[in-house]
Image (cartoon, rainbow, N blue to C red; front, side):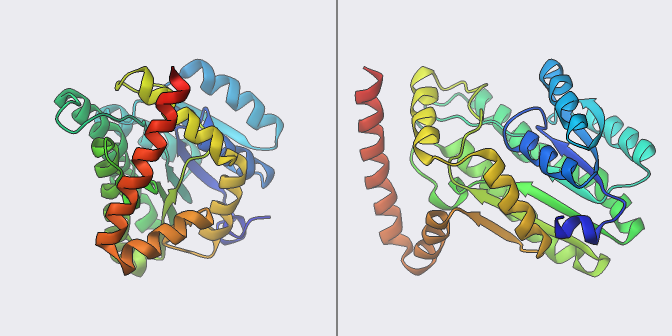
Length: 279
């Protein structure tokens, strides 16, 4: 049993991006402890299929088709979940998209699309659920950022800035909510097996290169979910994983200029390998 289950015995969670990847893995883990899980996702078919599996694992599911970039839709969904569940103990702002492209080559419309999902989706989730948590004087917020917020590799400007924004939002809320008995954790993983580039707009090479890094990582979503839940139970603000991501975080703090050059070198090496593989 996870510590979060012990801390929040009413076991009510709301998870975005719940139909696949990390969101789905999270639902599985919570289902083992008998949570009521508000599963939200833009892909309705996959959401229904995932919910069926989660129910078999012991969880109670409430399904919500949701585009997290739509603030009016999100408001209605949040109100609906709170009415049905009677409150909220765990909010997991997980939905997101990955993409890449040269800074001035990546269309402005794509920047706006990325911000609306990766950044504003987190803002909306926190905005609509925090009042209920304050009223309860309890709750835990998990926000999915990325190690990209640390590395800030070239050609990932839009993604990097949205994930850095999620870190900033989490740090701000950590300070604002601690007196209300509400915990905040910010997840910053490197690549692991997920479909984050399913909706990528940067072209086939972006998808192929990202998939290469994902496969190379060897990390499965369920492993990541388990570590996150264990560390969130300890109320850690920064959940940076795996070990090489934590090493990267320390190196950036100790030698920022050297770190920037190193990221550039490693990025170019990785891109050359990806290009060779895509031929």
